[in-house]
Length: 387
Image (cartoon, rainbow, N blue to C red; front, side, top):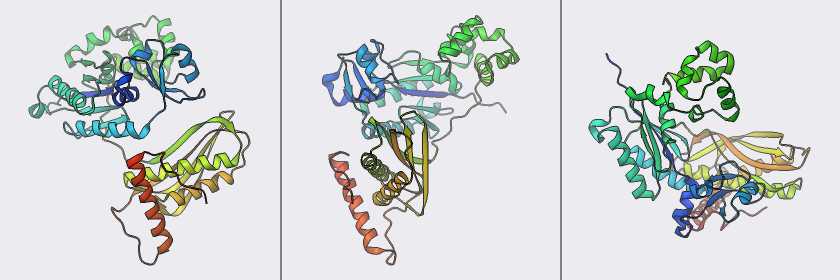
């Protein structure tokens, strides 16, 4: 029986965070917009294409981005808003195939093999997806279509923004022969320098080398290079994995060893995590704090509670105790809270009549009231007070 050739899409939203900021504030259209930490210690999460013309890019320190683009608009990250739009996009994609692997908030792989009778040719499907995303969210995306994931990802990066690149199975060899090696996912500056020292400038040049030679020169990555040179990729589109943990963390405005400051930050992050647990219908059994010190060394400390919880109070109290039980060997740069060992909480579950009734019911009502207020007015309008 002949195996059906795969048709894989890689969808990558264009400058996702910055594009949403422009969507929400049209006065920013055409201006350089940089989203990320707003302090000198922060880094760029996303820069729109106007900002990229000045050399601003993701992961660049904010102070450097301000030097390169002093007239740019610098905005803080709004995770809840970006996640909201991401969910809308995912719902659109689900109308075309259940085989979706979301790899980040703004990109996903789709396996649309065998859907032609329902939706038309791969090009027709892709154009329908792009059109719906634009109409329903106001945003653009770039899509690569290919026989496998690695080629689809390469394709989605070819003609940004609002790009479409289709690589047919019969055209793979010719496409790779003209593809610069720096377009291979995972090839950074160091590996690019090494490849070019061997005279490898195009992916097609890799064909001069045996797999053994590439393994000797580049280690495990050599095998990956060999496979890509042949246009091969055996990995499958894996449907969305279950959430393993929910976390919240931040780099502090300045390094500190003040436990009162750290306690407040831990309580704030615990509250955010608990809110997300309730929103996504989870409870968690293990509570963890993460601390990164001024020398960039890091530690995590965890505690498993007797019963899985989504209570802000329980998570905050446990996280604060973990903080106070941990001697601080240096000032703290980053702090965060995570909850893992997740399980689905029963929908609209009622507390039993005999399990510490009064306090648990009271805590649940407080949490639900705070969630409703935040959903309506924003996450910063109300915070949990300290006992």
